[in-house]
Amino acid sequence: MVHSEHRLHYCYCCCLQYQKFSVGVRDSGLFSFFEVGGLETGDHGTHPDDVIQALKGHISISYQFRPGCPINEDNPYYISSQGLRDQIHCAVIVVSAEKLPYLTCGDKLKTIRTAASRLGIPQLVFMTNVDMVCGLTCKDLSKIYQSRRIKNRMKECSNLLGVPLNCIFPVKNYHQETCMDEKINCLMLDALTQIVHSANDYVEKCSRNQTHSE
Image (spheres, rainbow, N blue to C red):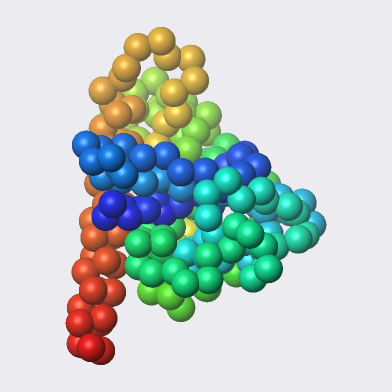
C-alpha cells in the first residue's frame, strides 16, 4: 500500500508481522511500504480480514499475524480512530508467474479485492519471476512485452484475480545477479511509478471528498 507519505501494501509475502519500510528524505519517509503475511490456502496464511483491516488503517506496526484468528477491537494493535494517514492508498498483490497455475488463494484475494474496491482503493499486481516461464524473456528482458507466454500468463492472472491487464506489471526478480541490471530496474521503476500515480489519485480523491463534506 502507498502513502503520501504514501502507503504501499503487498498482499503476498512471507512475513509474520505487519511491517513498515520507509524511503525518502523526510524523517517519516516520503513513501511507506507495508507488508502482510502470505495468504496461502484454507486456514493457513494470513486471514483476509486482517488484510482488509490493514487497508482500512486499523492495524498498527508489529502486529503478529495468526492464521484463523484475525484482529479484533480488543487487540492492543488495533487502531480504532484511524484517519487517511493510517489507511492504505494503493494495494499491490505480488504473485509468481511461475506458480500462477497453482495459485490456491484465489478466493482470499477476491475477498480482499472486493473490500478494496468498496473502499475505492486502487489495486495493482506485480507478476514476478517472468524469466522462469519464458526462454525469450530470460535471454533478453527487453522482449518481455513481445513474449506470447508472458502475455498469456498476464491474461491468466487477469482472469484469476479479476484485475485488468493494464494493472498487471510483469517484473523480474534479482536472485543470481551480483550487479545492478538496468533492464530489471526499468521494469520495476515503471511499475512503482504507476503505483505512486494510483496512490496520489486516491489521496486527492479522498481529500476532495472530505473538503466537500465539511
